[in-house]
Length: 301
Image (cartoon, rainbow, N blue to C red):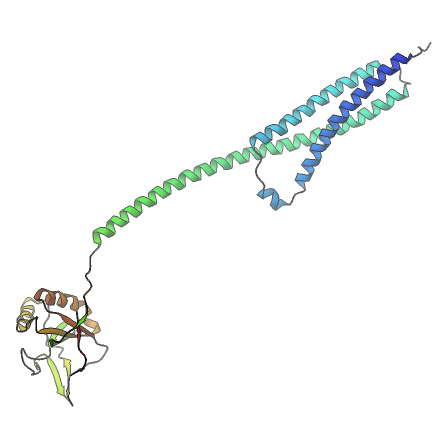
């Protein structure tokens, strides 16, 4: 004979079912919320995902804790369902069966969500490992950069030291006008050619070819003549020739061809040793230079 239910038994069962449903509803709400957040993150553009900040260990631990809480809630829900099944009066109790069906559907939905969260957790774990690898690579690159900077500083110091050893201080000549008389030379073929004989207005025909014009003199160097300053005897001839002139009354005018600029540096040192000032006149690719009087004061160095 079927046992008649009392009002007290029905109320207790209703309260128990309400407690289980409320607990399960809260769990499902948390699971669905977490699933929605994951889906929203998965729908972000690929560029934003690549540029987003990597998951930190604290975030990974927080997600793992949430997943563990859901798993614990799932276990409690399964235990509650088992208790509910033991309390049901008979299979014909339609209300209990409906509640069990609802709970079963929600249980399956929760399992799907938990599977998705497990997959997401695995992906986060993999990303965390990749982030650790990137951090290690960055640390190694930083150490290599520091070593490279130190090596570069050493090489720069060595280069500065080498430049200092090979540095030569050059004194720039001062330029000024003068009223002194000039002693004229040609510097061509790497040799020095005096235009006039010492202390005279007569062209030095042994060294130059001269032709007199209207108030001017055109001169050119003889290739087989001239004084080579590297030759000791001819250098002495140059010194003897210049010794006839006083540094206080004379200066040296030098017409230099392009093939003899190297020889000029040696001549300049000789002039400085003798205290003679000079005037440099570069000459292009011509054979003759014209010498004449000028109304302008010459500039010397």
